[in-house]
Amino acid sequence: MTEHQSSLQTPARRSPGKTSAWHRSSLARALFSLALVLMLGVIFPAEGAFFRLGTHQGALRQASVVGILACGLLPVILAGGIDLSVGSVLGLSAVVAAKLSIHAGEPAWLSVLLVLGMGAACGAASGSVVAFARVQPFVATLAMMVFARGLAKTTSGGTKVATAVPGPDGVLRYVEVPPLFRALDAQVLDGSVATVTLVFLAIAAIVGFLCARHRLGRYLYAVGGNEEAARLSGVPVRATKILAYVISGLCAAAAGICQAAQEQQGDPEAGVTYELTAIAMVVIGGTSLKGGRGGMGLTLLGVLTIGYLDKILSINAVPEASRLMLTGAIVIVAAVAQKNS
Image (cartoon, rainbow, N blue to C red):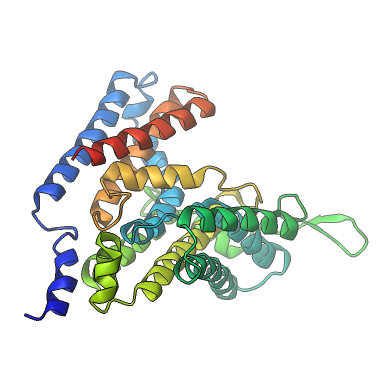
């Protein structure tokens, strides 16, 4: 086996499904965290609400949009980066999707294609700044976060893009909710699963395949594990980083479309603090913030953990401010647990 082949196969051994000691310990911690949250629901059932099927369906539905963001963040974090702009790109995508579908009346396929293209462009811009200008991912994506949020407010005129459309005479007229939004906001399988949850699972499957089975995944693990060694081994480090951010941008755009469909409007303030929750989902699952270790299976456990935690706190009427503080604390605890593992 050549040195080049050996170096590229080493990161693959860290991918999901491998019975390494690190993976076993991460899986055990993720399962323990999920069990702890579910036990919290049993102890504080909110007058039996936790034991109702609708509560669990709602938890999955609510976690799906942020879960899509977590799927996009996974490749970035595996490559040793971070993306703080996903919440703002989600808000921008929600506004543009509503503008195209509600106000312009564009067909669903064209609206989706244009919004996904915009999300990919945002990701490519952040990735290029990180890869070519060598700006720290925190700074580069922070700049994109501010830019995308400002662009969302400019595009929407600072107001929500709803079904009330101003006519030529300035009088508001109400139009129907576009078919794209109705389809994404529907319940399928006899009303047991939300369409947005199926979208989330499909995206998780695609990104999980790329990370675990595709050459891009091996590159991501290599770059996150040791960037200089990956470069010397022939890994296209710059292209790998850019592709990771492009995937993140695509997922943020898809999440924005789903968010707009659920709210039946494009809100320029949508997605605020979502990046914190998405990062918490990836980290609580066990993916290392240092890069090079993690996977989609662990991330899905993190999505369930944070999703159920938010739902349990919600049905027990815990204020949103307290939920945000708890999410921040969870990120710190998960990071410390990784450091000591």
